[in-house]
Amino acid sequence: MPLLFSLVGPRKRLSVRSCVRRRRALSFACWPGGIKRSFLRWVLFFLVAFYGACTLVLLSVRFFSPPSTSVQLQRQLEALFTSSPYTEQYTFVPLRRIDTRLIHAVVAAEDARFFQHHGIDWVELQKVLEASWHQGRFVRGGSTITQQLVKNLLLTTYGSILRKALEFTVAPLAELLLSKERILELYLNVVEWGPGVFGAEAATQYHYGISARRLSRGQAARLAACLPAPRTRVPQRMNHLSAEILDRMQSMGW
Image (cartoon, rainbow, N blue to C red):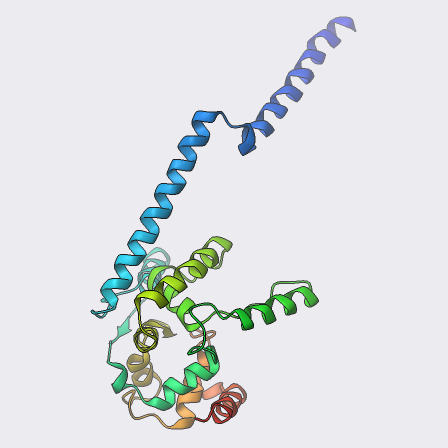
């Protein structure tokens, strides 16, 4: 029995010590100084590189139409890895070639305070946080058109705290470098409006077979109602939501 204990006992003690060492290794406060500095340098390098790249992209789209976006690339890769058929429709058109009724419908549906905020709608964000607190779960919403442009242009649709943090911090930069008119023009041209369908011109051609400058008021409201879930919603089924959007447009003087 003593022999058995001598063989088993020390192994258990060593196992406990190894567990403690592993836990300490996972704690950033317990990392050796050299590793800490190296890690922080890499984090700083990533942040500088990311925000530098975002600045360059935003400066370029201030004058030129983006040939593609990060979400378009995401959809292409998803189709490639799943071996799914994929056809992309994307035509960039100037804002003047998009019916004003669609512009008004999208603003009314997605970001009613678009012309008042500077990238982040703090009033709407407070409402979302209060609703999340009362319901005991995170309530989606509160993203501005500028934030959604950043997501479509520079990030992906995959939800995560990191993506929301990057989106939240890049949106004011977009507002600083781009005019409100240009933000609207970019957003309406790059936002996803169906499977492989990007932008207002492609969306109106895909759903209605007409140009983006020939929409009726009802068609515009139905298209705007699809934006929260563009890959599953179709305008023909958006009766209730489109009616709400039409009411909002009227209350906003449109």
